Image (cartoon, rainbow, N blue to C red):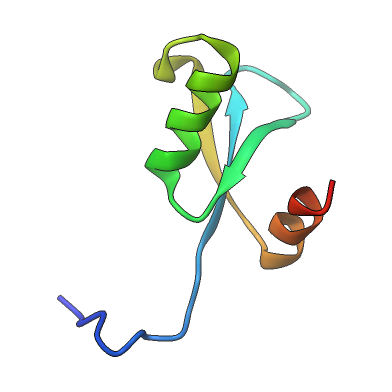
Length: 67
């Protein structure tokens, strides 16, 4: 397992979407897949298993953050 100290210098970004949404419109985004699921559940009041997580680019993440 690689060490995270010092920081390896890469980031991952995720969006949580409703399962079955053909447009895959994000409910929320984050740098952690579990956090994105938890936030989507909290925002909508639906259980976490109603969502799926997709990895997104840094540009998509920053675009969502600027809204």
